[in-house]
Image 1 (tube, helix red, strand yellow):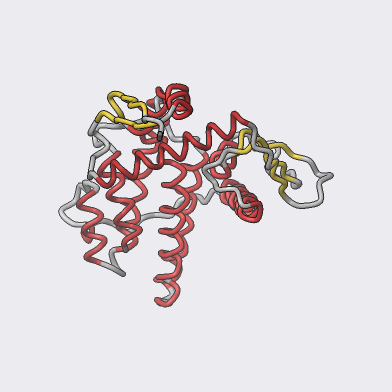
Image 2 (cartoon, rainbow, N blue to C red):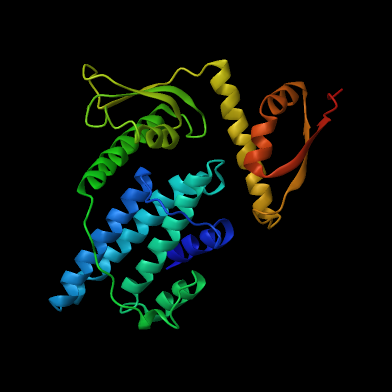
Length: 287
């Protein structure tokens, strides 16, 4: 329940009722979540038709998990992207999926379904007056490809954990042994972002299924420090209960090294943390 409501709250904060798109999204994340929605609709329809009510609830929970911990988490940056088309696709896809999901949820959790439907601006007087959704065609290709993406990501994150390198620290390269994704160029950015590496290469001669380049150059170390700074600022925004629409100033007390770091990434910091200005205050050296 909380995961679903968190997705709805995120949409309310970052979405926009005035955002529309006439073109069907080809983004792999949008294709994936629509394929999962079609799969869920088929599974629930089959279970209800057969009066096998025990088979209805598990697919619901699995779908919410995919929606919140994969689709939305990987789409967060798209909601504030400079690419207007991609931003519109993310917003419209999230709203459409949530509205359709509320209809599937209605017979099982009627009050929660009604809340989701109303908060997303459903057009009927109640979700319970809507027709049962039609499943449509399931895109099996994107489901298979995304399963492989998530498997590779899981292996890479395990390798990070074993090496004792936190995810916020960028790394230079991830090498993948399997070639299933070697020609899926639209999926590689998902791996790069999730594992936090600069590039992905394929090499069937390596022994492990994935191999991380764990050498941290000075440039990579600086990027890691910057990501830590961003995380701290985001935590501060949350503590101050700021909304995404609140553009504020930031004062940082730092030494000379910190001054150099902040100035190098100042524009990105302003954009990511939604800042009007960054003021640096030099720390006095201890006597």
